[in-house]
Amino acid sequence: MNPEEPKQISKELVITSREAEVQIALLEDKKLMEIHREKKTEECAVGDIYLAKVKKINAALNAAFLNIGDEKDAFLHYLDLGLYARSLNEFVNQVIHNRKRSIANVKQQLEVEKAGLISDIIQPGQAILVQVAKEPISTKGARLTAEISLAGRYLVLVPFMNKITVSQKIKNGEERNRLRKIVQSITPKRFGIIIRTVAKGKNIDELTADLNLLLEKWKTVVAKLPQAKSPAKIASEEDRITSIIRDVLDDSFEAVHVDNKELFQEIKSYLTTHIPDKKNIVKLYKGQKPIFEEMNVALQIKSSFGKVVILKQGVYLVVEHTEAMHVIDVNSGNRIKTGNSEENALRVNLEAAVEIARQLRLRDMGGIISVDFIDLAKNANRTILYRTLQELMKSDKAKHTVLPVNKFGVVQITRQRVREATIIETSELCPTCNGTGKIKSSLLIQEDIENMIEYLVNKQREKGFYLAVHPFLHAYLTKGLFSKQWKWWLRFGRWICIVEKPNFSVVQFRFYNKNNDQIVFGQ
Image 1 (cartoon, rainbow, N blue to C red):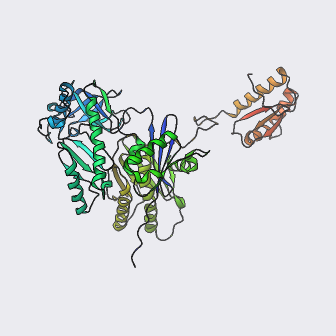
Image 2 (tube, one colour):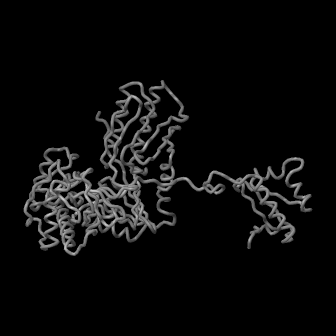
Image 3 (cartoon, one colour):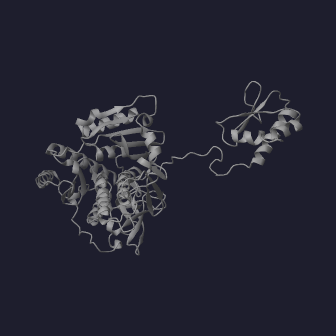
């Protein structure tokens, strides 16, 4: 009997448009796996192309700081120049000064050596064409590359590369050769192509159409150079919505839900042009409730972000973010233990590994991630955990490396970081202390109440009013032989009725008149 084929994961995109940003949620089998936020005012994004001005060279770093018009200087390292930086610089210079717009007219320059000085390639004050590789993060400016690439649905166009490469994820040798031959036959001289994984099985017409779109995009970039004055943005990467659809959409996607008519038309148009067989999966949401609530995204966001993430059967993760790294601690909590401690620890760790792989994608955590699993005594169990985590992270499109479990039960992961990690605040401001962690002392509250009673009795001559308080405050004011309530009767000559309100915060109190209308002071 053949083993059952693994169930294909059902995927959906849920997109909501707000005043300042667009939020995109990726669901796999209705479970939230990624959340992306695109600010409508965002200036500098991965993939944007700039005509930058070299501000200064730092010989110690073998790097340059460039002005791209952002408030923070961008950073270009020698190793990010690419092999064809000299040819690209010569081409940009010709376009700006001589209006020649074909890279075929540019004399082939020497490739950039693997070990060299950046000052031999660029100089302060020079205009250089660059692309954003990493967005500004914290106090650091954008990281740049001089190896320009334009990504399409199936292909990536790289000027001056003169080489065809095929995605390593396409394993079949015959398919790799077929794709390489097709692309070689349609690619103009002095251009290189990277064939993406989704190109597998595509015919020459589909690949040619994608290449033509990329060539038109390159022509648009070149056409803007003569009029541009550095620093200037020359081209913007497709917005996050389009790039996500371009990169992740495959046959397993069942629907794209959008709550904005303009976005709906934009996505529909993109799919009609690039993936016509998928154009009908776009759905315009017209419900009354917010789309994230209707699709159960809002609840998943609340339960998945924050310092503590609860898993099944009492297992939980503690997630800490620091400037240099992220730390995740695995805890068994009050899980009912069955079997020996080693078996139980392995079960908890494997459950946690599933959620950790999801959390890395969901929060888009980059850099160094240190995961403290529950200690495992047997090497075989540590190997099982390591291989399971590797397998779970195969669906993560960000470049990453997972190191084996060390003797302390810690796994170190490095994950590509191109933008700030996604941090969503799931806690709410305490209405009692306003986030300070402190409340007024009982003596001060008592004094406030007495001052207001004195005002109502002696100045406003209010009749038939009563005081509403939390049950704790009610007990403080009414209990005892000589309670505060009795003392008020002796002081003011009137019995002050005090009513319990369980829905009040601990130190909250209000006065109401005989018509049950709240008495507002200062009006």
